[in-house]
Length: 341
Image (cartoon, rainbow, N blue to C red; front, side):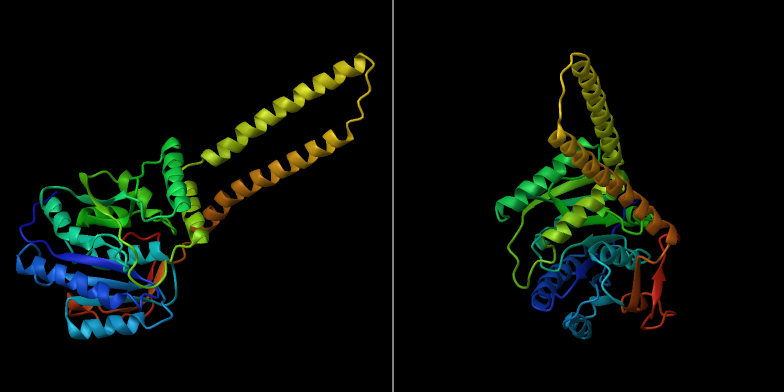
């Protein structure tokens, strides 16, 4: 890592309907960033970048108000909701040309923002990636804790390198962000991609705090979709599992056929209506499952080859602060996964 005496830092904060919590979060992050600037740990033009992921409440109006109050705040607004992963990528891509360090953190600040100075110090010590890792999941329900542990265990068994109990609270240097942006998936699984990039890394540990206001943006439906994205983006193990299961069933069917022939030669007549029907239903269900798994991969291939934009930026108030040639508002800026920024 190239040593930087005083790096420029951008804190990327994805936002979706965060009106209740945004003023409190902005005040906390602003104090931390101001302290870093006063201590000459980061440059005085470091920024907090809010990415409005198509919110339906007053989130964007609050971001504009914060920017008018303090120049350290700025924002990027999507034309509609594209999802948290897209918001993270958009924030990192926007900050990449101008920032030596970027830190991503959720707007609810359940991740410990007081660790930001520690992350900056570890980056100066030579680490390109600093993961924020939870060391206590006692605030989670039993169901959420058990499913999270099962997900990490299952992904590890499949050979996918994940950092357990790490969400999206992390620091990245400019070259890591550049390597991440070179990955062109339309729906990138960031938590799985970053460990595969390499680079020197370390961890900081914290206890996750209860949400101060608002509601969680990750209900069970989204958690299941997120887990499937991680699974299907990094391994073809489900297809191989279907293959092996099919071979086992075929072997069982062959053994059953041999047994039926043997009983027939012995003169034993087996009617077996229920067993035959059960076998037909079982095999039919297995075929449907197999087709659906393969269809998931085919569908994702179909999505990738279309090269549609991962997100559309309607307004960008961050970049003009560093580039005087760029207009104050960028309308319908398309980011295509097939082009490396």
